[in-house]
Length: 274
Image 1 (cartoon, rainbow, N blue to C red):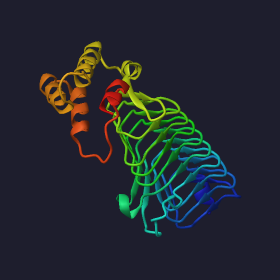
Image 2: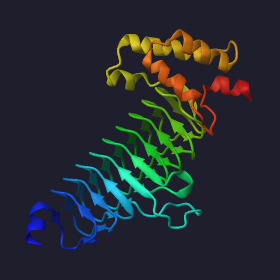
Image 3: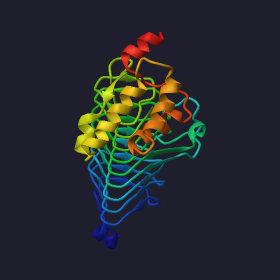
């Protein structure tokens, strides 16, 4: 027992199941609860009043702040106690009052959060969500079940994302948005029943995209959402005209992929379609 406390710091008031896997240098603060199916990576820190349960794995150097609930059963009436999992990558920061649920039988039995994500106060990740790396959920952002979020995407504060929606890489969801359709990679959406408002230019610049890359993306975007022709015709034109541009290829591939949701489009086009 003494050797265990040399390599791990577990507060006397914490309740840690003996079957839990606790990595080297883990710190578990006052009044935390860690279940038997949990594995905490090296140097992960639970501040205080944190609950981690279920078949939950956290990578190295994660940090969970007070009153977060990680790995408890999903809020799905179809869930019948199946042994579904929650996997959280390395260096993920989970702030106060965040909730993350494991998967369900209807969604692959797995919820996944990638490396280097930041989930701010009150964020919610529902069952069977798949988050890439470097994703940010701002305060009170909520993801319904089966949502896919690509690398470097940002979900603005008080936003809500409908189940089965896909959000592409480097996309930006404006605060207080209701997102019920897929968001293209590098896109920005906003509004109640959100509409596409352009490209995430600020984010692209911050992440080192060259001026030429951004120029090509803007040209492809204008072609894709131009008023002439059908959307499928414009998509093929974009695919042919910008075949050498990786970022444009990301958008084309995203649109062509199978999805149960429609595509979030600029407001003028969406209104014309109605």
